[in-house]
Length: 355
Image 1 (cartoon, helix red, strand yellow):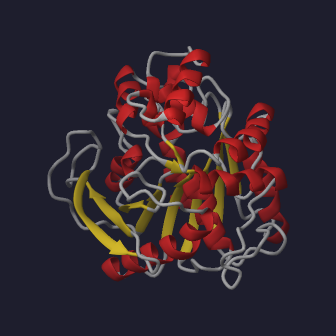
Image 2 (cartoon, rainbow, N blue to C red):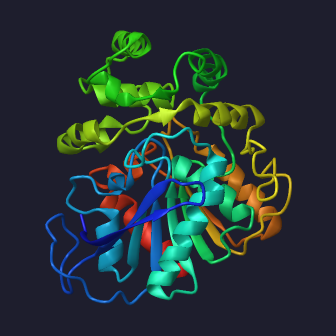
């Protein structure tokens, strides 16, 4: 992992404390997990990393030889990772994608610009960090962002058939009984519903011996596993994920269930003055260039979700944007896979430099 320069904590307008972590590497160093030296001044502009739901910014820094923050910093980028309201570093809150789109990203971008003096910012966004970020930028709330590399899902929400059925049936049923789902129940479940869910997961998921891995598969889809291919993870990283997954509110799953039914992102209607109800019903209010990544074996959101989003953007700016299907990859192993530094990260760097 790249050395941490410092962390900035800030409050959103609705009262949540979030944080930004700035990364750097020592001059002349290779981007390895052992770098702890002070960093030179970055020669390139800031890049914001945005994690998915129920994890934290640390998900970009698995115990692999090379991480994405380290590789970006070594290339000369000023790397910032956001812990938005979907982070397990933030106190549990019943968030929606709308909340993050309106409150979290504009505030984070403002702070990065204040700290760096940058006029424009690039972003690498993943999963529900991607969906909520896409809501914000498509609604015109992030005019300073000129390049976005989005992984797994963006505007279109196409899931496997079993996951679609699960979303339609389990979300309204379980949502009446519990406020949060938590993969940590695989390690310590207390209360009736957490124990029942843990029993169900243990009864059906036999793909590995890691209880958090199995609960993450149950929480986020219908695969075995859902979020990665086991062969893409080192044993160390597979064990490390036990500490990297936590609470996710049913408020999010209720909104995502409506998005899955619609086939693309829809808002809750709480912020009609800032967000459209249907994010694919009008032209995007941004001039940014987008590159969409979809893992070939993504069992959380189908890779054709990203192809559909590319088609949407191509209607308004033909030939400007890009799509890459990542052969042999799933959902999160795009960032935490043992060979991602060879298979994926160079392509991300190329796309950032192309901008």
